[in-house]
Image (cartoon, rainbow, N blue to C red; front, side, top):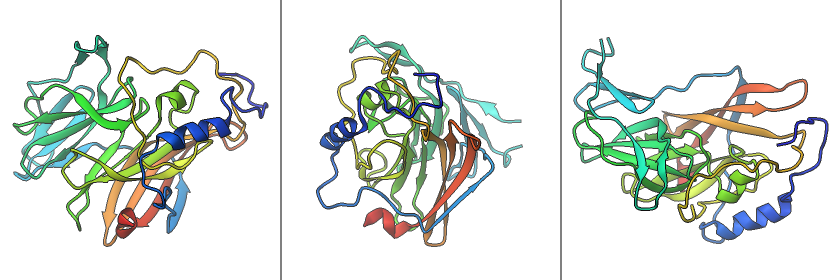
Length: 278
């Protein structure tokens, strides 16, 4: 990337061309809205990012790094799981890749679903059949993603899963737009497939539905030089989800890169749950 924050030039790949490329790869049907408008938006100090889930048996599962810990006494000496996650795709000759900063959700059949960020252009998913003690091999989720964490929760009123993450195509990532879009989608089949993709934050990227993640060919990294960075460039990451009555609360860190107000800001957006299905 360039290092001069006073320049206002766009990257080598123009925004117009990039927008066309992304829109051509989006899978949302014509006529469906691509962007949600929040009823409430608030910006405050930088906040945290928990990754806990309470299981049906009353125990608490926490994930961090490549391991999980469970507590059967309301969160008081935690026990580390025996299994761990190791990203390796021998069939495609990808070698080892990160599969980290995970989040988890308990599925209707009792299994645990873990979603991890990776460097190969997709979120990966991992399943546990024994409450997080052991884990299966990571596999592609079908969600195009930057190397950034997501958040997943179950919608209390419908039972569907909802996920918010930094959706980005391979080309966007290579051109420096890793965390310039936050997307949200729902799954009616416990994470097997995702639908109704929408954009909830964007900076220098168009609103999209669900992008085609493309073929997995290896690590997807930013080019050595992509041009000058626009002065209003900002990113968003580390999202979280909470439900209250008939609303869904989304919060994330919005990061302004330049200017007197540069820094990370805790941002809250509030939507009706029904907005996710319209």
